[in-house]
Image 1 (cartoon, rainbow, N blue to C red):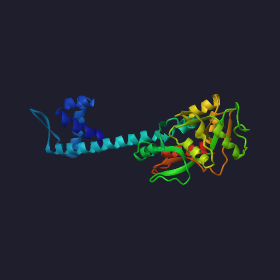
Image 2: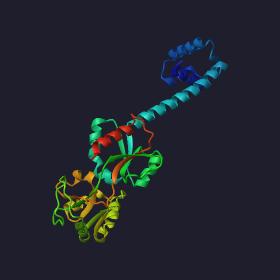
Image 3: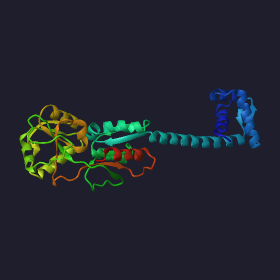
Image 4: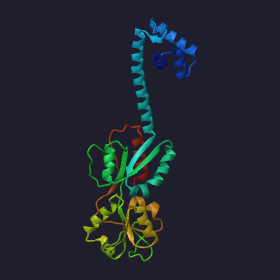
Length: 306
């Protein structure tokens, strides 16, 4: 007994006619009649009787119809579940902040697609709390954002992807620090950071909380950059471009610097006052070894780890 045979009998009973059933199933009527005869022979009982009102099912025919309907419904649901799982394995809904989406992940996706071109990625740029809620509701598969070591989110697995640190970005014109191009190791006297309050500050409020993190820790050092905010934007990318093309300063994670501020003066903020604020991937913890979440997570670790 095959799913095709179950469908044949079910359709004939619903159409009350072999001719109509054959047309609906796109098979020749003689072939359908032969298939029914074969089914009846294998069962040893007739499933239909011909009357003046058309082809009617026998008692055994109705039993077969009810069983066929039930089996085909289960089979249909199974195929849909499998198709949905296959589709899910070929797409990843990623929740992240606009800070990382705009400044870091773009080139990374190009590298990932070279390894796995079939995967489709959908990015949801939102605030952390909103991202976690969507992750909890199953609307996204994985989240990537900055967080403090030791932070925990009930029901989620947090894995370190990239150790990060805050960077001060300043235009090379009229710079107030004797600095160095990115890539060379050089610390400067922390006292000079207090001069920040005298220079234009380009601030961004993009939902990532990154500026708030830096400002909070600068305040512990007696530095208040908000006293001279020249411009506020909702895009970290815009803030950095303004600094690089005009004047002032802003802050950026170290992980984002090499891609977006070539040739500009950048200053790692070396200070015990700053706790780690690294990039983590947050997952539900239910992902199998071959799942797209696990594949993407392993790629993130190899691509971003500093």
